[in-house]
Length: 296
Image (cartoon, rainbow, N blue to C red; front, side, top):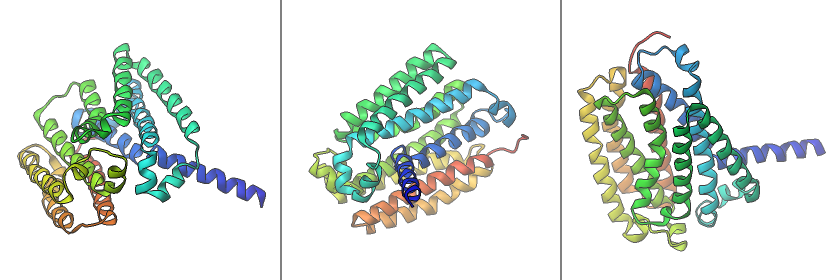
């Protein structure tokens, strides 16, 4: 019985740690980086060659570990706000003490610099800047009006630009994909601000909903949703291959999102919208595999 209780406690701590580092997001990121590399940036490269590319593996691993450490430090600075907005999630994530989380944060960043050093000294400098930027965002910029949303999204897509420079592929279609992803992430980030409005106001975070109003914020989101039509149109005339269906289905998805956005009037509904956007981004990641038909 004692063993079972100890086992359950350790299991809960693992679940807590998985939640703190946003394990789901890390898994999706790794999958997205490999699929992007294989089907968009280097479509002529065989899977076996990509998987055996040690430098690229270190690049992906460093990106994943940087993101994980970023979630930890972000969680640390957002503790007071999360206690208001997500009390159950807050309790789960603090089954692991903040001291232990900060030790893990330090260890992850050391591991990042180690894997970056395997690639090059420039990679060490790049990831050092990446780590510092995440810390700067979590501790200061996150409270700044409007800039916080842009900075958050830029940090999220940075790993994709890193691998773009690794493969030195700068075709215009890649920028269309990046623009669509950027706009979707920006919508998600602002919807998240609507979801966290109560805690943001109490902790004096200068987000769009706390500075303006929920209605004006919805109009801003509506404008960004309309802007998504630009990359969708441009990608419709590109070589998106089998992924074209995803962009075609984006039109009814965005229309549904718009309807649900204007009907939303509470935290639970905004959380539902947030998860819906995460689901659509995941679908987009999986659909990358249908862009081209090449051998393994």
